[in-house]
Amino acid sequence: MQPVLLGLLMHRQWVDRHLPALIDLLSCQEIPLQADAAIAKSVSSDHHSGGLDPIHEGIDSAPLPSVRLQQVKDTNEAIQWLNKMDPCSLPGS
Image (cartoon, rainbow, N blue to C red; front, side, top):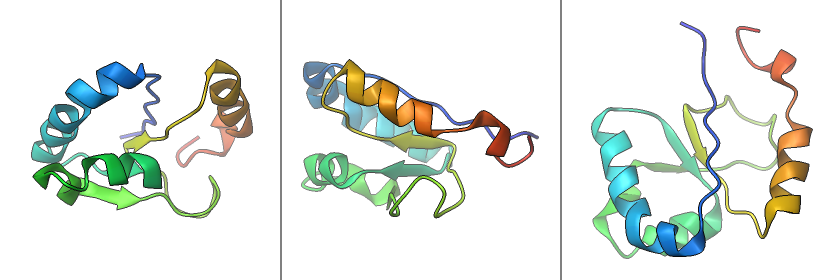
């Protein structure tokens, strides 16, 4: 099976209301999750943070998880982050 990297751009209000439930759902399905520090901190007061692994420095420093939760400031930052990723360098490509 080829690994899949799922990227989601989410409005801050949606994150505040629904991210803990999304994390719970994915964790229950044993789907590997990574989250940046800001996202991990936003859910750390809840029981939801147990399924989150920290994002390591740099995109290529660790094997890609199935889902990576990366907070971005705006659409421009999201595009810059996505442009750093080379789909041909992903495992199984």
